Length: 206
Image (cartoon, rainbow, N blue to C red; front, side, top):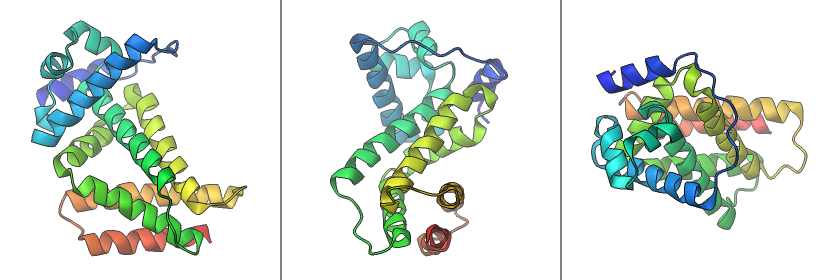
């Protein structure tokens, strides 16, 4: 792990952050600039290209201000992943999957998400590496990524009232999708294998 990530995640380890009050419009705009800068830098050079000082400069915020929003690069990149998933979710709601069964719709949805990440492989790698590096200090950000992924899957099922079994299946599908993404990014799985694994997991939703 790069020295910056090691130092920052060590500093954050075991530190519980209280719930923050809602952001003002100005604070939210600043946060959006930070996330956009993080995504741009990661798209160009992956995990190592996202340096906190450069993110601050690109987003036109003070370095101290950046750290108040995101205590480390890992926090920032995990939040960037959650932001990217939010955008994907909005796109999917505008153009929902068309499969006949819940399993087909979820498979279509996750493969669309996978193809979106394929178009930005360095960004995808940076976000997934951050998610892998994250410890308990970044658990709120990690939890938001998990909830967003599960919301995308649940929307794709089209089920009005998911049962506990459906919810358990969604958790397994989420884990499979993330694992398949890691395997593809590390060169251990082909796109065909990713699709096969996702299709297999999605059958649990029936």
